[in-house]
Image (cartoon, rainbow over all chains, first blue to last red; front, side, top):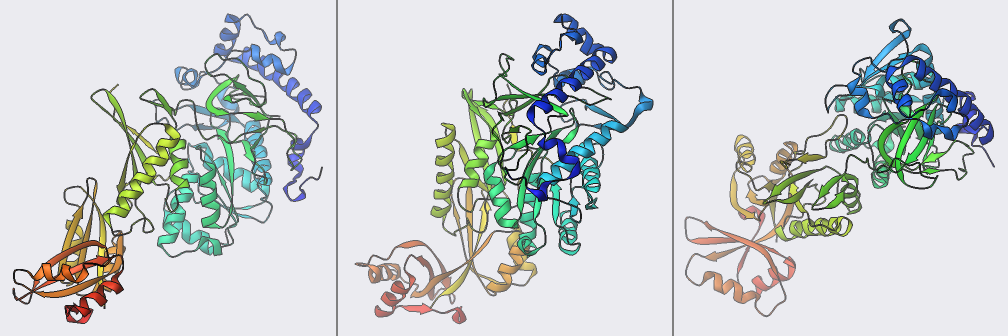
Amino acid sequence: MEVNKTCFHPVSALDYIPRTELEQLQFARLRRIVQRAWDKVELFRSRMEERHVTPDDIQSVSDVAKLPFTLKSDLRDTYPFGLFASPMQDIVRLHASSGTTGKPIVVPYTQKDLDVWSSVLVRAFAACGLHEGDVVQNAYGYGLFTGGLGAHYGAERLGATVIPISGGNTERQLMVMSDFGVTAITCTPTYFLHLIDRAQNMGIDLRKLPLRAGVFGAEPWTESMRQRIEQEAGIKAYDVYGLSEIIGPGVAVECTHQNGLHVFEDHFYPEIIDPETGNVLPDGEEGELVLTTLSKEAMPMLRYRTRDITSLSTEPCPCGRTIRRMRRITRRSDDMMIIRGVNVFPSQIESVLLSIENTLPHYQIILTRHRGLDQIEVQVEVTADMFGDTVGALQSLQDKLADAIERVLLIRVQVTLVEPRTIPRSEGKARRIIDRRSL
Amino acid sequence: MRITQISIFAENKPGHVTAPFRLLADAQINIRALSLADSKYFGILRMIVSDSKKAAELLKEAGFLVKVTEVVAIQVPDVPGGMAGVMDALNGTSINIEYMYAYPFKAGEKAMLIFRFDDPDAAVRKFQEAGITVVGQEEL
């Protein structure tokens, strides 16, 4: 098997180690991290005791399944520092999640944790074909959010030139992109679509710039979104996955073959479970991703339930990496809307909108309840391409969209065409669903 | 013989067509003819203005969704039966009217009819054969 030399970087050697060696390493690290969690974190110890499990019960990697799950609510309930396994003098940085659903989640790092984080991001960027000499425009938000500083140090360590522009200020982003010889960008996929839109408005053709790759993450996105980004910006669009509870971005990433995300499983041990029963599912089956950190000092995480739906593949990848791949995440188990008894994911609606020619993915889903019956309205911004001057043309577009969505969801939705730029633009994560149902 | 028309997409909400008119007024652009087509959720505002190019640019800059289209304008006597005569000219053809609107012209002596046809060239020929005055941009 040929190893793609341009992807190779000394730090990424572990990406290619034989699986038996990898499993030995995972086992050794798992033993150590479980012991640490038991010794230092009250919640982990009491949960293990409830299940009559001690660190000595970990005799193989698969014994991870004996450990209790950790939920997002556990992090909230122990806010702010309840799950810390290191004293504050060893903690060199604190990040926090956005806290849109209540108290934020505080994420501590020791110096070693930061080193691991940078090392996985170096491997991630290298997998996307980035290398020394690249000019990286880092448009993830800097601050408490892990995206900005995480990508920053990773790209710096890779040997790239980093432009720490942070999120927002779209026109300046485009000026920098045009003038600074930017070759790669890091941001959320939604924000990049916004940049494409604004560039078109400003008469900037992104395809003519040196920009050749984007490493996009922090929210689920779809294959059709990738196609649109790649076509309209003339770049390769890669998916990077991570979550602050585990480390931030850099848990998994696509290689240049863009067929699933390689999980850096020497640091983050993945399992797929049935979200209903909690049972571990074999590789290849779809379920909820559960992650155990294998080297995190400041806040080890045992079997964290991510709510992200995916599957794991052991099929060898043409890039030569031996670490497993997970299918790109397009939905979360808690993103699911139940409408008239039907499970609906926003990503399904998005895929349909994107598959209809000339439709830009600026949309919003509004849920209401009328006389006890759930109604979905999908608001879609009309674009110059869609606007054909006759009422009939617009009505048939509405019908076409509603029909296409109905074929996927099996329920009828109201498609409403709205004026350009009336749906709030996200500089960060997209807010796609407005739920006005009083449940 | 075509004239330029500007169409704007507008949501069917109160106040949504005020802004374009204010914009044209401030730019000293005169509106010669106007129609507002509506459906349940959206409307299309169509206008013939004194300076289409400038109007379209201004409206686009302000963020409106603007479509510039070519329509056919004819002049008929403002008397009973004027419209029936026009329709007679198109009878027996397969020309389809997508939409039309009318406005008085030259202080009530004449009426101006604006048409969008699926086959404007054929329609213009039919009108000319029937002796109906097709109006050019400069005559507006």
